Length: 263
Image (cartoon, rainbow, N blue to C red; front, side, top):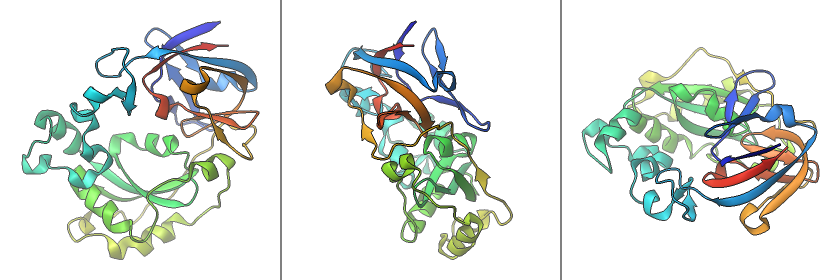
């Protein structure tokens, strides 16, 4: 059976293990049901997630003109410390920026390759951790806006990583960490503006991913260059599909591509 649709990040359900769903406009696939089966992925065309046109994807699933215009791709998305809605200052669309920035945000520690610090909206816990392939995570502070979360993350980046080593994450080359101890150790570096929001009594969240075989030397599939790929799906972690031949395919970084998936 062939399914066609534009790639967007897989939806997830927090179960043990995580359930993954690839959602198209008129269809969806429970990816867990495809584990240990051969599937084919074929590039069809582009479809910008904003304008819907068949234009080359620039970043984050958007064509170049949309990326530099819409609020969903503004700099404060990747750099929360640049948020200004709390000051009534518009970047691209103040109404949208207020909606997203002026809501509870979490600064967290996640362990996917090494311990890293990150920011997400409270409503995105634990989805954000699942998307990063973290096997354990813990909240540090819960603040009322994105700006406070951003300056806290910046302060903590001097003492802990802020990026995931995707190869180590996919190889499962990881170790368990005491995130409660990490949280307590980092408390002293939280900015004065955010220290009152420190979370003192909480525990780690543990996450199990549906993986039968981890790749020894993961090689990333470039679907635009290769156009089509077939292989046996043996795992899903983060937003990556893992195939038996060590090929991995990052759904998130290929958003905006229309594909055929043959099951």
